[in-house]
Amino acid sequence: MINPYVVAVGVVLGCFMFWFTSAVAKQRTVLRPDIFQEFELKEKTILSHNVARYRFHLPTADAVLGLPVGQHMSVGAFIRQPDGSVKEIVRSYTPLTGDEVRGYFELLIKSYPHGNISQHFSSRKIGQQIRVRGPKGAFMYSPNMVRRFGMIAGGTGITPMMQVMRAIQRGRRNGDRTEVDLIFANVTAEDILLKEDLDTLALQDPCIHVHYVLNQAPTRWKGGIGFVTPEMMKMWLPEPARDIKILLCGPPPMVAAMKKAAVSLGYEKARLASKLEDQVFVF
Image 1 (cartoon, rainbow, N blue to C red):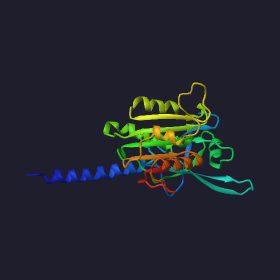
Image 2: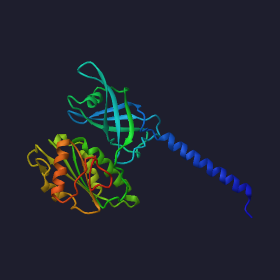
Image 3: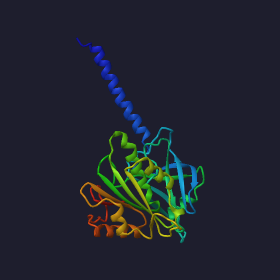
């Protein structure tokens, strides 16, 4: 005969654990899509003449952003304009880190001479804050959602690609078989961001392939030279199929050229606003 006291205790414990787990999860997930929150800058690492990696602390050491892989967040700031007025400017960024990291998040930011938010970042000193809300975006990665990704990134457009590739590699132990072919375009060799991380990913994972393209290549360069061409795409990316997806992120002129080239190679035409089910998705 089942002891009713044991049953009652089990029910109470089960309810408590459900409440406790939910409460902790809710507490540890920081981002809010409806309001801006402030996060303090703790580290700034200069990667090149105009790119830096910024690390911001979350409220507690065990907190996570709550950002699905492939999504981004909005950074807002009140910026004084040339006419003296103050205007709120909002831009979207994909963190380098995901919810596998607790207690902080990192952003890779390229500084432009007339970029309102990028200049706001470059002027931040340790201890100062930025305003963030999210998550947002139409892309959300799930294991084995496609057989193979073809990725084309330019400059800091590498950040969503890196996030997806890291998620794929972490998922190998749980059966994620997704393959990746990445074309990463930059002006010079010194402009290649996260090259050591990318090379390590490709070295550790035989299903991840990285191809570099430089507009100004040094002597004895073994990668692609010039702009990314349809010929490079045909050589390095998966052929059009129902179970592949092309991901694009980079400067607008490059993305526009890649969308046009993709159509010429038989891929589906990209929409103005990409949806998750699209064969060609633009971040």
